[in-house]
Image (tube, rainbow, N blue to C red; front, side):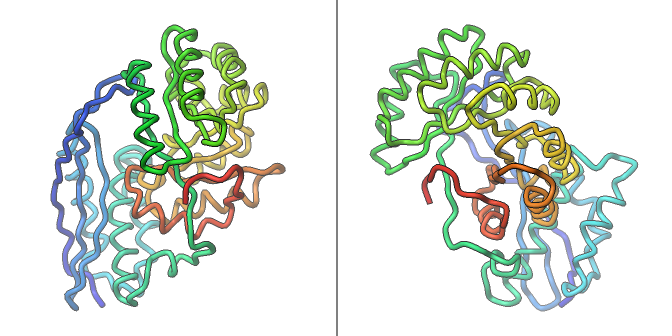
Length: 326
């Protein structure tokens, strides 16, 4: 089977209720969809995305620029794509928009392989589980405490038993108040996760906040310091008892290696598109087995949940901790 064309399309997904990340309001998720057509009629699908439509045209052009690496490629010999693609963009940079574009095309390649053999992509990657723990990412900084209560009640009615809320306000007392209110609403049997989303300026300030919310039984404390600084994250990890989670804005498997080497987290959360696709994601997961002297869990994190599930099912370094939703 030979790939004959790379085609792209843009999809605009408005957010029903805009929310604040602490840096900007999210109005929409905008996707570049990549389609790989073949001489046998099968079409592989992949995607990457931005928020609020920013730099969408640039991202689409970057995806299209990879066409010469896939057109004419035999699907059975397509394993060379990732290496060739990262070499092709080396002067431009292997992170950022390059990784996002490569991810979309590589996802389409894996989708084609699954369709060729009529199986779930997870089976081709080497699945080692049939269920994957999950949580709901919710309770943004723009929500009032009354809104947090209503949201918690709604999520519980939907059956969620693992919920992530956001912290990182300029006043840490308000963060503590919000976490306390949510924990009281959820009760003791629901996993509560806290995401600082790189909003806290210093390790010392982040450590102080973590110690204050620890009493509320926090499952993990995510992106504890500004700027994805692995050395600062390592300071926080060493100083607090709540497991530290990070890696969402880390690029390629080399970035995950650095986090492991510095002991910058207890839980690594590579994002499928920032990794550069499933191949890089699985390299990152393998690092969790071979490069650390203590238990480190790899949890995939991405807007592209359906595609992430394939990679997570084949993630052999996942060490189940406290159970989340499956």
